[in-house]
Figure (tube, rainbow, N blue to C red):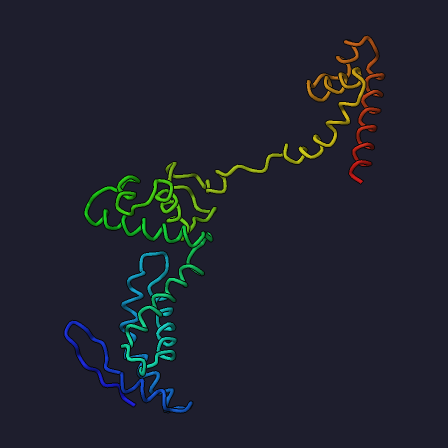
Length: 262
């Protein structure tokens, strides 16, 4: 069950044509499993080379090699030597497709549309080419080389950050020592006023239905912040009278709002 390797110029592809033909004739069992494992091991270097093309994209090379190896097993099981094509012409697209699927399904921290992923790939390739030549890439330069529009270039560039994200517990790089400040500390918190939006919108028409005097007293107390004593002085009444008016108005508004909600 040994696999004969034939060294080709500039290539280390094994000669497994006879082994594939034998695999198709063998029944399930130890002999077939052993030959299948030998074929997979013979082609494993090719799978690893394909996986290497996808390194430095946010996934470890070891993980990519495992994906490629599983895809190789899938290719070995699905290859039909009687169709006349060489095994690499069948295996390479299979392995490449599984690696791309892995990135699409698992490597992206943020889910983005496939179109955006393709824009990212094209933009990244051009950026790497420009960087290798020692140049500095601009949006215009990327657009010229990729034949993409300005908006598409910006979308592709922004998607480059979708592979990995920073923890909110990390101290920001800017600001020196940081003093224990984390990214979470720089984010805004919930606006307490948002909790009152629904309530205020609910009572708005009810306030509009109040008498001019009641509406004015309500405005002075809760929107201008005047004390009951100052409001009483404006109207020439007692502070107790203003208190009773405010209690009546608030009770009326509350009951009407709850009745409308029900």
